[in-house]
Image 1: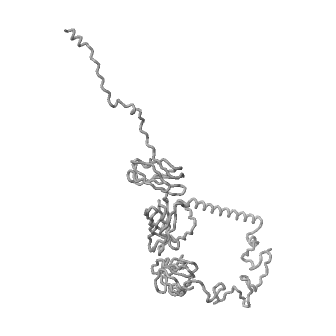
Image 2: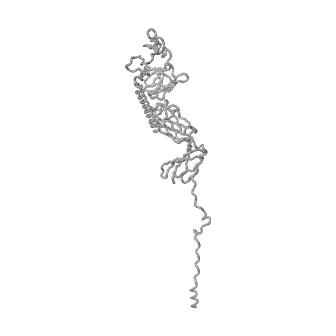
Image 3: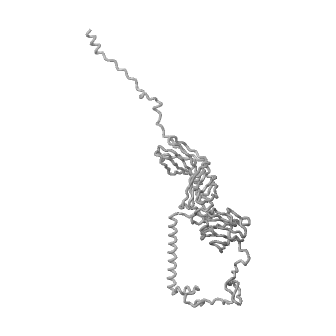
Amino acid sequence: MFAFCTAALAAPKPAAKPEPAKAADKAKPEEAAKPAKEKAAPPTLKVEKKGSYVYWFTFKDSEGAAQTTLPARFKGKSADLDLAPLGAKYSDAKLFVMNKKNGNLAISDYPASESTKDVDLPEDDFQYVRTVRLRVVATDGKPVESAIVNITDGMNEKMTAVVTPADEGVATFENVASGEISVNVEAENLRKTIDSDITIPEKRAVPNFEEDIRVSGDVNTLPIKPKAKGEAKPERGGGDALSLALQTLAGFVILALIIAIVVIVLKSRGVTAKSALQGLGVEMPGDSAGQPAPGAPAGPAIDPNVCQFCGQRKDANGRCACTITPGMAPAAAPMAGASAGPRLVGSQGVYAGHIFEITSPSMVIGREADNPIALPNDGTSSRRHATISQANGGYSIRDEGSSNGTFVNGARVTEQKLFPGDEVQIGGTKFRFEV
């Protein structure tokens, strides 16, 4: 009995049962072989026509501040969009794509940072003009001093720009849709916007667009000479001005050197400045009047009875065709009773007795000194008071929004046909219209 118990105690214990493997240790073969997640491809920008383009974004950053990315270039018909400059969090993003060849611009909203996407831009989307400059001018071509310019572009987008004296009459707009554009100008004493409808073409000779917008009324203008059509705009480069100054200075230096060399050569030959000038026929002070220079051939004999100016022989009193005597009109003047052409003859007021010839189809009358018919001494007339125009074989007068009005035969008029003998009142001056 004791031996049995001892044997039982000495018997080895059975091996412990292994624990089941944890779920994490049992990796599935297909999961173990699966590669790491690949980085998402950048969004793609596609255009319809092959060419050279630039694109950029405007957006608000994570703090709500407006930002703009540096323009990036690409050629062909597609490019990968670089969104890194936008940051991890952005909103209100817009994508701008410009065709470098014609300057046309496409503008597209771009989704928020949580949902980037590819962008396809058909050719019809390139309908915007980067910069539009509208130069507001009075009827005489001078730019207005100050104004507010309102436009509605080809996509019915309304825009407003302020014109100050520093702008020289130019209102500047950006990202304007081409097509039919309506324009409305607001300015002091302005009567109406003459060029209220303009067209911005999609095909242009230059990327941007410029146009003059005429307005009527007694508006304030800048003393700037009206720009002729086709006149090139002056370059505003400091380098060009410096280059011109250096070229001018070099020209003076070269001219001075040439003169110095000539003087030295003449002195070496014993020729003085006086003798050189006399040799050229220049009469020096102190010489006898009419005495020829030494060595110069005698001139042809002059007949004292023949006028040296008109070539006709003088009469017994020494008169010829070009002689003007008191009370006698010059030969070029019209004969008495002959028509002197249309004109305004001052009959009352500051300019009584003054005669203003009407020499062109359209002439502005007013206080401004640059007007064809200027009345600077009549303080009751407006800067551009009225305009006399020729049409259909006759003449008419049109008030240009003057403060005190334009009167014909005592009646205030806006536009009135004129007949010989009509009395026209401009400010405090009365004129008689003659033909």
